[in-house]
Amino acid sequence: MQAPATGAGAGLGRRVARDELLLVLALSLGASAVSALISFTGVLTRPGGLGDHAANLNSSRAPDRPWLDLAWQLFGIATALVPVLLVAHLLSREGGFRPGSGLRVIGFDAARPRFDLAWGAVVAAGIGGSGLMLYLGAHAAGASLTVVPESLPEVWWKFPVLILSAIQNSVVEEVIVLGFLLLRLERLGWSPTGALVGSAVLRGTYHLYQGIGGFFGNVAMGVIFVWLYRRWGRVMPLVVAHALIDIVAFVGYALLAGRVDWLPTA
Image (cartoon, rainbow, N blue to C red; front, top):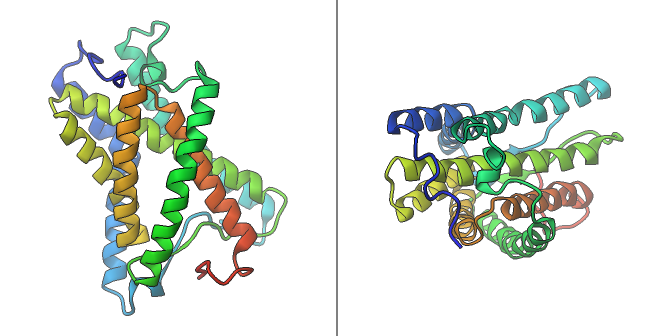
């Protein structure tokens, strides 16, 4: 089964499709890619190897004021989802706001919950396990920064916020870098192979803050996710898989950091 990209946006001009894509990326993962590239350049030009530096993913905004910190955490999660709402609006408008338009075009819905959860768990187990091995190997070889998935204070909302952050990451990345990006690249005349490479390289680039290992690991993940998205015609199983991978990474680090000797810590 092919992804629902085929024929989508048939009435959309190429210039409009290009402008919409560039605007969505500038508000989300495109800006993240530029930021990660600048960050990576900064690390390379500082003394010491990559392994001597750390990338902090979920950190405190107000360490001594837990309620203010919680407000900042929820604010950051909510605002990060705004580009997804923009994508939903653009796809709904393109479909004339008819039932079945919007994010349903890319399979972001609850139409097949068992399928999405089951295959999402399978993909998460395969990619999550291999991804951890790749990270540990890259870190040992000095090709990866020390990734600190969380450094939140020990407060009651720590784990709920980490789970919400993981879900937010998965929704933003898969809706935009899989569903919307592939739709628009097809409309712009990109070949299936070119669109796959573009999506995978973008995914790797906005993970460059993790180092060379993070780049190549996420490029590989991007290739697999594009292939699965085209096979299933749904982005939701990949959202589930990504969310599970990040939940395990965030919560697992919180539980294991400093308690096991194989997990790198800052």
